[in-house]
Amino acid sequence: MKLKKRKINYATIFFICWFGLLVFLIDGVLKFQTLVDYCDSYIFVEIASLLLVILPTWAIYKFTKEE
Image 1: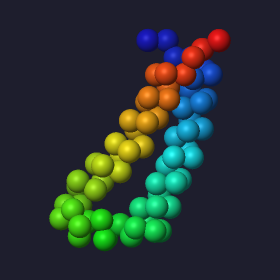
Image 2: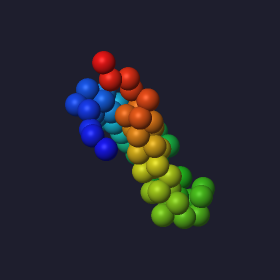
Image 3: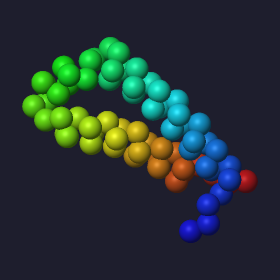
Image 4: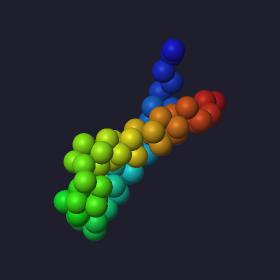
């Protein structure tokens, strides 16, 4: 699979913004320990957080049109 520079740039910008927003929400607003207490599993919250960052970033890379 050949990587396209423009697609990588869009995906990188999206990754940084989305990651920053999720860190703010999870650590600042929702409090991570509250989420762990609610879900009863530290690893579930970690995996869910990672998937919330990785899957949308992959989708942006996949569906960005290359000119």
